[in-house]
Image (cartoon, rainbow, N blue to C red):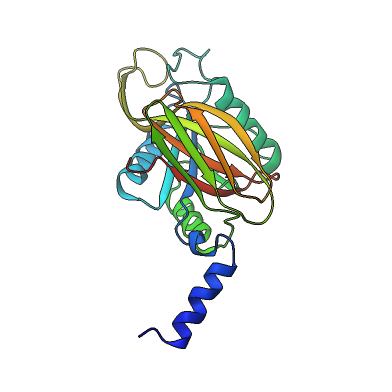
Amino acid sequence: MPSRFTFSLCLLAGLLPGAAAAADRLVVVELFTSQGCSSCPPANEYLNDLARDRRDVLPLAFHVTYWDRLGWKDPFSMASATERQDRYGHRFGDGSYTPEIVVDGASSYVGSYRREVATAIEAAKSRSETAAAVSVTRDGDRLSIEVSGGNGSGRLLLIGFDHNRQTSIRRGENSGRTLEEANVVRSIRAVGDWQGKPLRISEQFPEGQDVAVILEAPGGRIVGASRLQGS
């Protein structure tokens, strides 16, 4: 028989929007990288490890464009990745560099500094910054994105990514190397605004093998995240 204490906890979770989901929300780890950057492979390997070993983390590799003119054009580079990093650079005051990792849109680190990034991931897991529960499911070639009611507001971003990519580099700083890269972002776009009320959106499946959805607060912090269920 449930105790009075257990009943009180359940009631509290029901009264606080997103309270139960806060502990389960994925921590978003964004790596800004390029195949033309000789300092990036160790950071890529770290992201690969996170993708393989951590189900509580959503690691995403954003390939920027500004290395493309320096000997090797990264086939996965996107202007939208460069623009996203530029916004972080202005916010954090550290400019744009590779490899850079941003944890939950809140703090940035050199992407190969595993200890610092791991500490930031654990700190993010302990904070209660989930504004609402986010979920995404697939129905044929369409997606159903749902956001629960909660506190605050935010912008929903739909991200398409590939699980694993292998590239033989023929020129530039990594010439002669074969790079194995996980969770390579192929597309990112805003699909809606959330104003604290339950929201449901239907969207076409984006470019990429898999899908993630993140809820970004007006200041840029990530306050909700999910990946395609069953993926």
